[in-house]
Amino acid sequence: MPQDPFITALSALGPALLNALAAFEEVRRHMDPPRIGGLRDAMRPVAARLHEAREAFRAASPPDGLADLAAQLLAAADAADAMGEAFCADAPPHEAIARVLGAMHQHCRAQALLYPLRRALPPVNNFFLEAAARPRLAELDPEPRAEPPTGIFTAKNPHGGRGGFSLYVPEWYDADRAWPLIVALHGGSGNGEDFLWSWLIEARSRGCLLLSPTSLGSTWSLMGDDVDASALRSMVEYVAANWRVDPARILLTGLSDGGTYTLLCGLQPDMPFTHLAPISGVLHPANVVNGNLARARGRRIYLVHGGLDWMFPIATARLAHHELERAGADIVFREIADLSHAYPREENGAILEWMGGTLTAAPKADR
Image 1 (tube, rainbow, N blue to C red):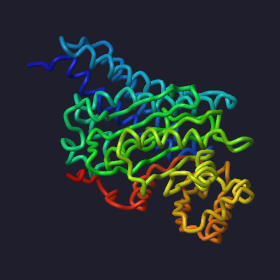
Image 2 (image 1 turned 180 degrees about the vertical axis):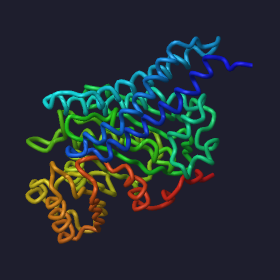
Image 3 (image 1 turned 180 degrees about the horizontal axis):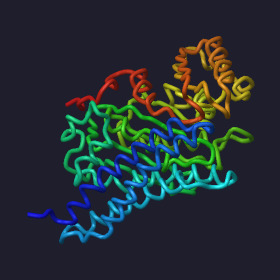
Image 4 (image 1 turned 90 degrees about the vertical axis):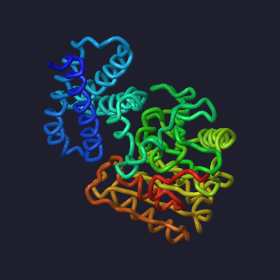
């Protein structure tokens, strides 16, 4: 008996979509100006397979009861297709940066559209878990419940908006134990709605609350008055008032400007952060004059930087490591030889393990 055309199209689109998202995750990790041409060449056949599968799926008629699922899946495929087109198409040099940034946004948007389908499509559910956590899928994604609220929430944080946040509470959240909190800061001109996806898989797999704020300005308060510190403090207080946060494990981390602000904000007095993990940032000169270096003594800091960083050369990170170590910080320095000015997703698990407790794997909630 011939297979239903919709099922055939669905069976082709699912792998093509997930492969394209995973491939672009690798592209983002290895993004470096001299390598973009090669990355684009490697991405083109993946994007072409997705485009073909998407067109076939669009032409297939879903059976009764699956129209909403089909529309949601097609929207995610549309975003991923736009990602591939923006990154892979030939463009004049003056458009290159905008196209790369646009592709990165569509990569995040595709994940946001796909995530609600995880319970209907098991491969999607596995995609949003670390491999070690997948055998425990039923436990990590139980039947939905109204209280306590779990999942993804946004507060004044649409793409292009400023000053809000996105929050992820694992579906297996249980108030019988305290949960670590990750506060993840985007880079310059970024936003929390997109940067949430840099950490969601690890937060979901290992049992962490995840807060991804958006700066009030186009970037964090690196010049002039610091308008972001009090906002971050209020956001953490909001999360702690509504979910059970472990006060001994509140991580502040960030990329680029977010990494720079991780130290500038996290070392201020009366901030709630217990662990700091700046990535591809710099030790801002203000840390010297505002007393932050003196407050670094004994603070746990996980500093990550790429040997190929073209924006903040590795020498700046080595200097930061030296100054923080001299100030008495309890510091780990990860110099990654093949990393440019990009996000090293593979460090997420190592950072959580460094933060301690049960974060080496997806632990069962204490009963």
